[in-house]
Length: 185
Image (cartoon, rainbow, N blue to C red; front, side, top):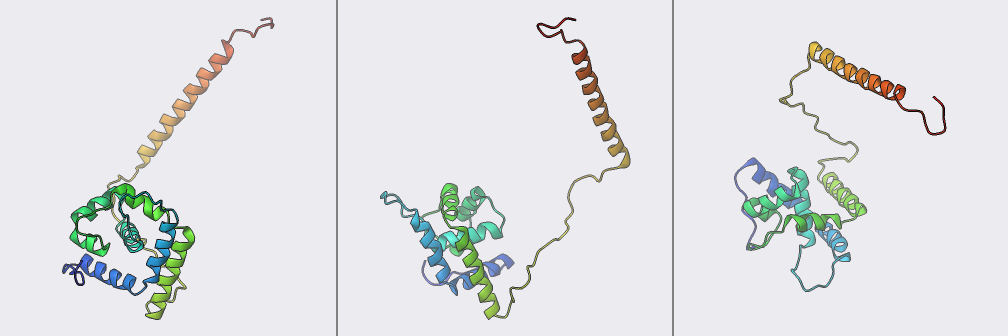
């Protein structure tokens, strides 16, 4: 890619640009990722594979946008902005299996180290002190009908009836069983 990426004038474009800038300010993270990914690389003469930076950026994008590996593969083939963010070459898009295989090679301790480095960056920028975890617990409307008392009562009666019928059938089966061999009736 020639020159710095051009980001669209959109909220997501600005977020991609800022996140990219932050990752660029912490280049050692890519080296840590690459160390883990390269530990399990076999010299087979096949395709070149992903760099540590691409693995990191694809992993960040997947988690940030809550994408499956299949959807991430689609968006990487479809979105110029996502491709730029992940620093992918123009004529190559990783498959969903490639996207899944590479981050799984990164050890848990490396992800913890990445997190600690990003928290340190945020502390240095006076954005975060790293003492509290922020969670989003926003309530959203869902298309699920609120249960009514009559529905709950109906469900209880239906389940109770089924259990009673099962008990009656089990009791009848126990009473109608022929005596075991060697026992007198």
